[in-house]
Image (cartoon, rainbow, N blue to C red; front, side, top):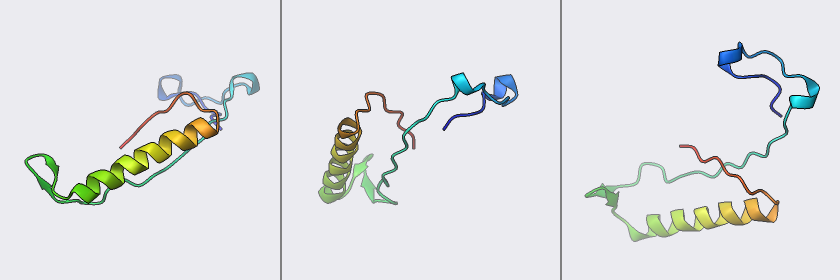
Length: 72
């Protein structure tokens, strides 16, 4: 739940009517994969990452989420 404002507003408590509930989904990215010329060295790493991306979209869609904020 988001219950505080941003740093520009001194992280003040939000009024109850402005509070938001958000869903959080975390999926691990590849850890330290070898690269070659700016690409993953192993095709299996690329395939695993693609499957995780698809899973992320499927889970979000299944739960009715239409907005995703991706981070690294």
